[in-house]
Amino acid sequence: AYIHDPQFSYRSFTRLEGRIAMDSLQIEPLLWTALDDDNQRARLPVRYRILSNDHGEFLEATSALTYHHFGSESFSTYVGELSLGARIEMHRIGESLRGSFTRMSVGLGYQVTSYAVTDVSSDRGALMLGHFGYGFYLPLGGEIETYYENRRDTYLGGSSPSSRNGSGFLGYFGLRLRQPLNKRFALRAQAEIGSAYLLSGGLEVQWGKQ
Figure (cartoon, rainbow, N blue to C red):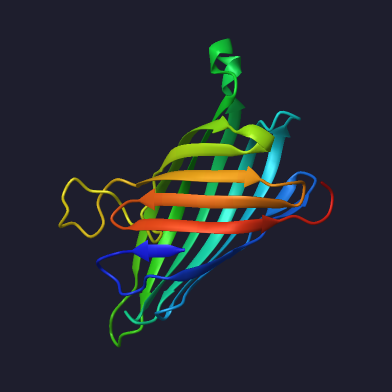
């Protein structure tokens, strides 16, 4: 992954992500590690499918813990969150929308920022979380989705009408692609923009039940 943020010196990252699925329960650990700076971000979402069907639609509850270490800047952040999300096939609304889908979620989080500086107290605050996306199916089971993510605690910060604002009051916008090559391998790519921008690409490998 490549991230350009004018407020920080990091640029290049490795991104290691996993997904363990057991019936209705999914665990998705994620680790970002900067290659050119002392910066690491670890995230552990746990998802529970309340409802689902064979068409990929679902209603799920998610809890997640996130730890983000900014070593060069001498602070770290901790976030706990809960959210409720759904994915819906758009042909339910109109037959002309067949082949597309929408994903959405809403939630709340609580963030603590701890400073490695003597006599400086931690900052605390609530987060209003949301994801609103619209996507299309591609050949061979692929899909592409454009979305808005209402959060400002990631590498993207928040969008702002002012180019001088390091992190604005909005969230960030993104585009993601997943294209299977066969039953075991898939290509993944992502582009996001907020107060910073991110480009990433990778290879997905599946084991177990296909």
